[in-house]
Figure 1 (tube, rainbow, N blue to C red):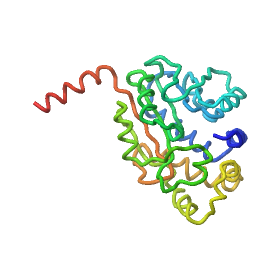
Figure 2: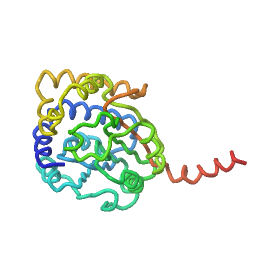
Figure 3: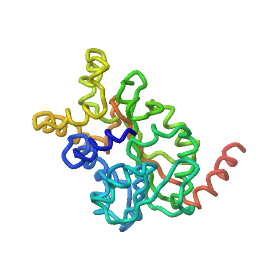
Figure 4: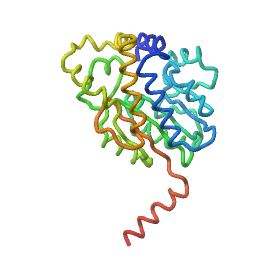
Length: 260
C-alpha cells in the first residue's frame, strides 16, 4: 500500500470503528475455535500493528509483513518478534511452526493466493487454525481497492474451493458486515469515484457519531456467527484447520472403503 495509507491506518489504529469491531470479532472467534493453551500465533500481514496487542492477550504473537514501512510502524507499539515476509515464496518459518495464523484482509494483496494458502497450511501445526478475512464481491470494487493494491475481492464459493484445495478443513465461512451492507452497496452507486480515496476514507469514518453507530452494528455480528452464516456482506471471514496427521492418513482410507 502507499505510505499515506499506512500513515492514516496508524493514526486511527486504536479508535477506528472498523478496527475496534474486527478486534472483537477476532477475539470471539479465536476463543471459540482455538483450544490450545497460550498458542503461538502469527499475525500475517500485521500492517501497522493494529491487532498485535489483543492477540498477545491470547498467546505468544509474532508479526510478519511484506512492507518495511508497516514493520517500522509496528515497532513503535510492539516489542515482540517481527519478520519480513512475502507470500508465497519468501516465508521465513519452518513447517509446522504455528498453532494459529491470523490473516486479516491480506490475501487480496497476494497475486498467487492459491500458493499463499498452501504455504500457510505448511507452516501451521497439524490441528492448527487459520483465521482470515477478505473483502467480498467484485461488483463492490472501488478506487479504495486500487489505492490499497488489491488484486481481487472474493465470493464465498471460490474462497471455499481455494481453502479446500490447499488442504484445509473449513469450520466457518460467512459474510461479515451484514447490517451495514445496504449502506455500503448504495454508496457504491451514489458516491463519486473521488470519494474512495483510501487516506480520506480512513479518517472520514472516525468521527464520534459514525464510530459509535457503525461499531455497534458491526461488532454485534460476533454474537451471530456461532449460530448463523450471514448471507451477504462487504467481507468474508473463514476459520479453517490443518487436519491432524492422523486425520490426513485416515481420510483416504475411508474414501477407499466407501468406493469399494
